[in-house]
Each structure stands twice: as structure tokens, then as C-alpha cells.
Amino acid sequence: MNLPEKAAYLKGLLDGLDIDKEKPEGKLLAAIVDVLVDMAENVDDIEDVIDAVSDELDTIEEDLSDIEEYLMDEEDDEDDEDFDYDGETIYEVKCPKCGEVIDLDEEMLDAGSIKCPNCGEDLEFDGDDSPEISF
Image (cartoon, rainbow, N blue to C red; front, top):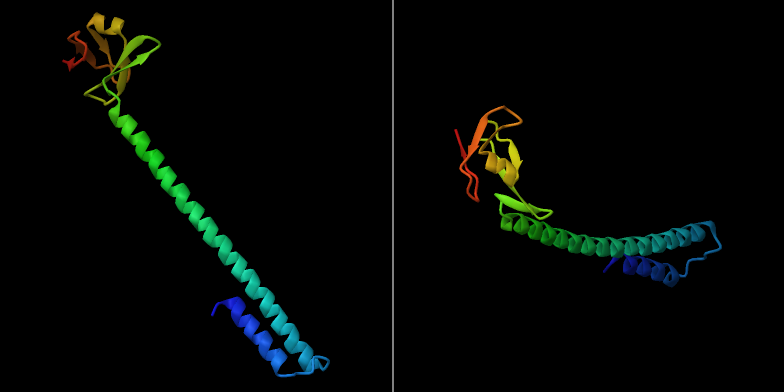
């Protein structure tokens, strides 16, 4: 038996006991039962809302998980070595000394070497399509 049903049962008992609702004791009992009925209905409504919000939250959580998975897969699919920026290929290399990621264009690769802007380490490139750092 749920809360509204229990409150309705108490109201039925009050009506069935043939209590005089004009006397102070009867008025008090009738008022208490009416409050219990109202509270039971409100609690039942709140439980329905909580269930709906919980279901919606579960859906949002699943959608967010799908988005996160999609974004992580997209990052894994990208080539970490290079990317295209306005028609120009940009290479990303990582300084072995400090770990700084440096973006290089074709011109910088053709130069054959650069200094790491973070630590000043001389970085040399062999000039092929996948730049490798040598010392």
C-alpha cells in the first residue's frame, strides 16, 4: 500500500467511526487526516518528479558518454604528426628535452633545424614528410 492509499484508508476509518466532527476532538482528527491526505499526495507527486528527473539524467549521462567516446575516438584517429591549416601542412614535434610541442611549417623544415622556444635546445630535422628530431 502506498502513501496516498494509506491516507485514504485513514480518512475512511474516520468516516466509518461516526465521529462527531462538530466536537473539538472530531475537528482535530478530521484536520489531521486532511493534512495527511494532502501530504501523501504531495509526496507522491514529488516521487513522480524525482523519477522523471532521474530518467532524464540517465539519458543525459548516456548522451554525454556517447559524445565523450566520439570525441576521444576522433582524437585517436587524428594524425599527431601533422595537420592542414589553411592549405599549409603544419607538423607537430615534441622537444625531447623539455616536452614542448612545436608547430613547424614546410619553410621551417627546409631550414633543417630550429631552437626550441621553451628550452633553447637545437632541434635538427632530416627533411622528409615525417620530421624526426636529432641532436
